[in-house]
Image 1 (cartoon, helix red, strand yellow):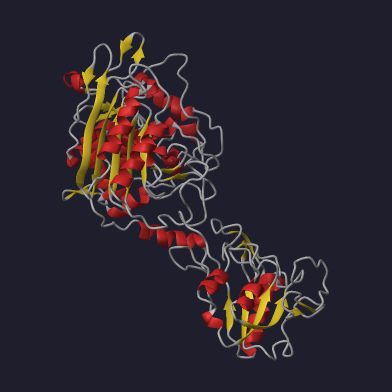
Image 2 (image 1 turned 180 degrees about the vertical axis):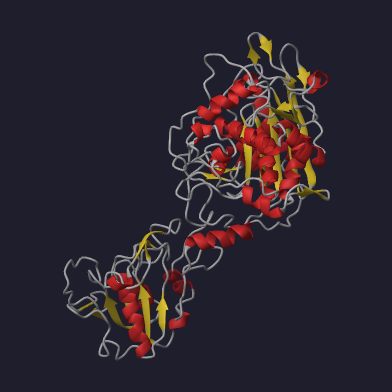
Length: 589
């Protein structure tokens, strides 16, 4: 069987479930690019940051951009402190990382335990924390890492409490507000629990485990929880709390109540240290000949792991496409990953171009301001543009640049269009059908991208269409009975043979008398209980009997290939409504 097939602007790929293509092309997307590392947008980036400072979005910032293991651009802007006196921002300023703690400390520690075989993603949390939910919960480690546990965003802070153990106990008894896997709720509780899981498995508190296994091997010497007083002059202060400017004391109130250490916040770090972490992740777990993780581990944690039926894309710990991924900007592809922090910090990494963008600001100093989502996005966009990144049309099959906002799932090529088999034939000027007599099996769904009927396009293109065959509901899709009559196409005068007339479900020898080639072009509905599939099967069988070539002009699955689900057809119940053993929702083109 020959198939002029539908294709995206990148590749012709059809006849395969879209979920399989996602696996194939996602893997391909992670290959390293080889573009120039010349950064052309320094002045534009400076202008973006300086405007944000002038508009009082931030007091200052540090930007650090790297590519292929080299620092491409780094600069300090504005002030790290406005109160009680002004202090200039410096490249070595230490920032309260806020939720960057989740990936740099907690997720990285879980990655190490995972690589060592000490934790499984699908294990219930109760395996490691027996007291969690009273020992009766179906929430897994996977649910915690992807924020699909159903737990609330945070524990209650009133009445006032204190102590690490108290915080963990509150997290362990918190009542979920949604079933696990059903709803994305960005939750600090998830990472409080993960931090304690690291402690229970390793016997080391999270700060010590991360320091030994992640920070020291990478040379991240100013990345730590509870920084000592001697480093305070280098630390960017945050908010005024109870009459005191927080400096070297974690901004997050829950972590502060827990003594400065938690799995969701509490880490302090610099742009240079974060660049080492980013280079390690982009290097497949290795930096400067120091290997932290196996490449398979970094890939698993940084690729989509959230439930397939949800529009939010999260890796294990890492954000990919969600309401929080604005720091991806508008040029880095979905498939890149990173995280943000409430205090104004962000890190984004793109494995396609081997690029990272770090923006560290203390936007909560000396008071809370609106989130700097727009600033983060503009910085990432300018950075990507300045590096001249040449991305493939498809970076992660099934998803494209967000149209209505982050976290909106797509099932077509990024920045691309889908061309049906008919459109491909039109582009090829119908070359495969030159010099033969064509029998066209079609109905009202046989339209080109421009809205032209396949019959008209073929005739206009010089194809010798000698017969048209219509399925159930007839050529116009309006016949709602079992005896659709033969007719003639009004526009072309070509005879139309009905393949849904009483017991007749196949093209007969008489119908095929003048046909050299059969072409099938009908849109499927994405489910097995319809007759168009069986019309195609019957026509293929008759073509085989008569030695006729058979072309299928492929079309996308209208309900996508994201899901393949439902019961299989029982073999003893085959009929014209279902003649192939398939799941109810087959996911195929």
